Image 1: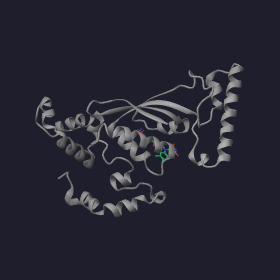
Image 2: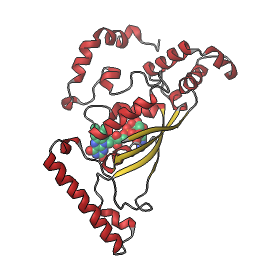
Image 3: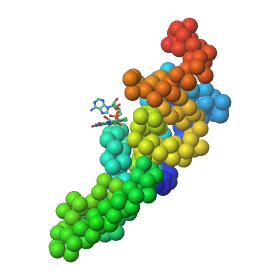
Length: 242
Ligand SMILES: Cc1cc2nc3c(=O)[nH]c(=O)nc-3n(C[C@H](O)[C@H](O)[C@H](O)COP(=O)(O)OP(=O)(O)OC[C@H]3O[C@@H](n4cnc5c(N)ncnc54)[C@H](O)[C@@H]3O)c2cc1C
């Protein structure tokens, strides 16, 4: 799997911080940039995330290109509606000799891996036969496995990325999309260190777990490690709404 950042808002941290500052400042928009040094930018973004005032984060956008993702994972990916996608078409692009993704659980066992490889080879042969018999690409693709590798370009704003990282970096998420989420975060974090600080699964970022009986149990350790911080952050005496 390969992940590349194609484009992003210039100076995303600052763009968000300036937009947010406007909400709380009588200053002219042109002057707001002067006030927002690195420290103030960090403080403003931290405050927005802690208060859940998330709409200013929508001003920063990031576009990534993803290659070598299985169709199985890309199907999960495109379920997120607050995003834009362009995926390589199996109607217009021949899938002859398609690449595929092998899950680690299959790779672990050489015999299973061989059976899997064989199945992929048979799918390629059947696809080929169908095409040679005049079946159009849009119908021949019906024999392609979910393991077929795909390429996709997607754009999301910082708020939507953060919410997606929470859901898809949870250990309960499927391994391939979790790997993808980690790779994307690794790319985006250096571009916007304040926006993406402490992002990831809610247990690590917020000290919360929504998985109930299905929890992996990591939350217990996180709470043990951060108990003083949690108490200070969530106590009513600290409510920033006044
Ligand atoms: C571990 C896991 C298991 C899953 N298993 C399944 C499964 O078995 N079957 C299945 O079908 N899906 C499954 N999903 C997909 C899941 O149900 C969501 O479709 C997907 O995660 C997109 O989430 P979202 O709707 O929050 O995101 P987005 O579509 O990006 O939306 C972001 C947010 O915008 C708001 N929003 C967007 N659209 C609406 C709307 N129409 N009305 C109101 N608010 C809206 C919501 O607050 C939403 O959280 C699973 C997801 C995960 C993480």
